[in-house]
Length: 250
Image (cartoon, rainbow, N blue to C red; front, side):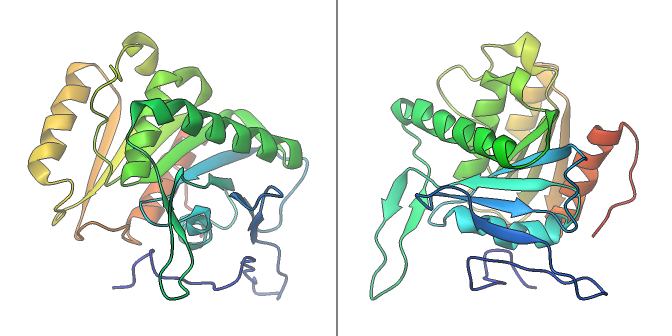
């Protein structure tokens, strides 16, 4: 089975052609520092306010992971944006550098600011629905997404964590009454070593005891993003956007 962590487009620009041969789905650098990426949906309509999909990449990757995620999530439904992680891993033998998110509590404010900055940059360039911002991530990026969404529930329409355990320390449920309004999508691999089923069940019990709205999906994979996860994520978010079950657009 192909995995999302494998490159599906080698360049900084990802163009996807429809049946008429028109290319308009693009993943590109969002800022001059090349530390973030923006996905423009196929046939972008400036007069339509799009939901925004904010992606926090997994460990030892970069913001360019967005261009491997979006074609399997949806080419039409979302504007996508991704910031780069905080910790640099220098590439060996000519390999490109990669990045990770810090688990240090002191780095949380820096990560939050980075997410805030890319959301604002996306809003300046694209028409974004103000109450339709979804925060998602993989692994440590998923854990960070959960922490941020629970700390700032008024900013997000939903949060999605793929293989990212519930954050430990720092009192992530300190705003429990407000956080209950944020729907949570948890995806995990059945054979995961980093987030085993026993830990998933413990996190689920904690969230349910707090009265959280949680959708759990278990997939036949290990510690990776399975392509099976992305259509489910699309469907879950679009049901929140339109308020009813939605036919998924590829």
